[in-house]
Image (cartoon, rainbow, N blue to C red; front, top):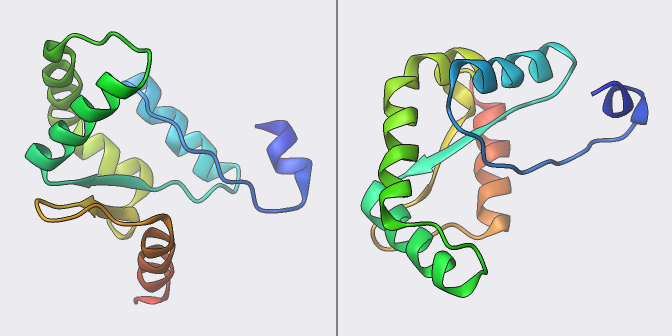
Length: 116
């Protein structure tokens, strides 16, 4: 995080984390260091289908039950996630009918930043 703070230019980091209190606290520390953390979420059925597709394509042998574990952690710690990133940094990026493109995600982020 020190390197990012000294970098002088915007840095985009996308990563998934187990939504444990310790990991969520990292988002708060990143925000305190000047980061603009966001949490992407959406329709869980559509997200599960996308996860299963990626699981087949990529060499990561996650058992189907792993999805339920991840979603339960998010559910259990939802309030901590909202506190760490802020209500105006929670963006739904996948719905039953579609998944947002990177360009649409960026546009959505910019729109949310501009909102009061």
